[in-house]
Image (tube, rainbow, N blue to C red; front, side, top):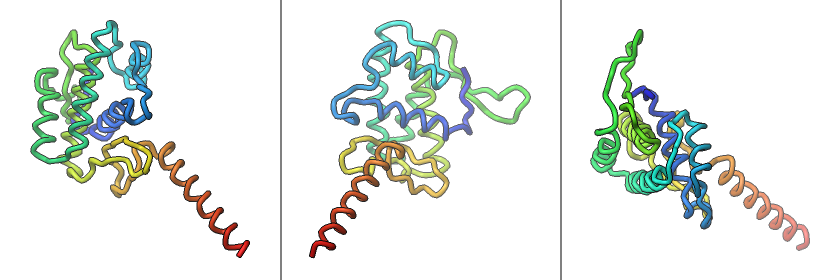
Length: 186
């Protein structure tokens, strides 16, 4: 597996997806509760398939580490933490037939190793290209998710726009409707 160093948008998206599988985001429900769910997560992101229970525990530990980095967006801390995620996992190479640099995962790497590399590349790329202000908590009042905003304008507000954003919009719509009904009765 190779991760292009300039593909930080995809890598930051994987990091966001990982941190938002945690039970605290889903009011107690872990979205990676077992090896099968981890295998589905890995397959969707072209990561190595997990094969043992230790893979699940390693990914859960990684999830905590990445969430801690996203929650505390200090530039030096992000760089140190992301560098630690990538340092022992791969070798930097020039992609064949291209002027793009990539990190190749060493042979025998487990899913957690590959995922750490991807998350590290995403975090480092966003820090370098977009800045630390792109690491945010979800803006939905009932959500404890976090995300890395890689949108062009940098105004993303929700960890999962299709879920959290829609919930906020529905709540706002209902509040407006109730307000209008109360106004019409007056």
